Length: 124
Image (cartoon, rainbow, N blue to C red; front, side, top):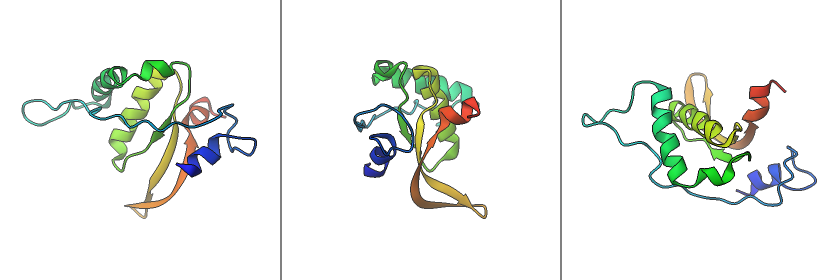
């Protein structure tokens, strides 16, 4: 959390956010419910719709027009679903606190880095 705060807040921040603080909010039960066979919707877009509904229920609309921080899970497929859902709900690609990386085809946990996906989306 301290690394993310140092990256986003203050005069020495890596990204100019104008933020004065970072608030951590854990959102329980945000995954959509699987169907009766224990499966989730096949496509990312369909899974994102379920995630979006749960994010709205958790209060993400309070952050419309603001870029939020998303802590990337180990599962890259769900990460893509959540990033899309967050972007659709807030209007901005999130800052991603990334700790999982692929190294020689193997997923490994490394030091955290913060990625500004909004800048990536805009090609900046």
